[in-house]
Length: 314
Image 1 (cartoon, one colour):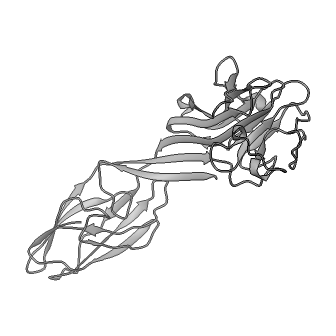
Image 2 (cartoon, helix red, strand yellow):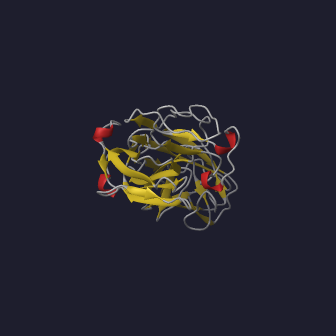
């Protein structure tokens, strides 16, 4: 099923309940005075965007399945499977969501089993002339370390192996807009087992792209595609946060907080402070933690359970 993930990775720093934080060294003295020495921690924030699809979420035998775009350039009727029925069998099509267990009768041949789950995207052979069928991903903006991976298979080699190409478009989903990146000749999908294909997309870093798998088989049978994944890493802007000076200090409590003036382009899902008698406290290793809402703006954090004559790192 579709998964679009946004992951925040913090390197060389700490992660309080904000995406960035100024460390404050606080000393609680018997008389309740707090002396603060600001310290800045350097870190990097990265967004990892992953679009992946195992085709499980779509209805069986659909010919359209957003966010994918399917384009049937050849417009020819297609071969069916002898003595087997299923919706849209024989219709002109590009790709179809194929579930071998949902046909009548169900198909149990291991050669047509999905790579994972119960479904895959299939391109059936055109009855006249070669296929020209396109399976086009949604648009993804690439950062760095960009690549696309998917699995392919021919149902059988009896009529020849399935043929395909891989292309990238930086403009739209029109087939004429794609640049083929898989080489000057078509590739073939094995019939004996599923094969993973990985293509480097770093030449398109910084651009928004569509990735297409084009079936160009000639009187073969069923081209099978499963478990598509496109991954890229983009450096995000750092959020901006300032830490408030501790006030209302007692023997066991103090008040701090801060102000998130910029989210750096990524939502702040929680904000607050953490403290400990050890340096560099985090949300998992601390002696106290607050959760003071989300988003940008100022917040107030109440520190409790403090001990006099003790140094706390906040």
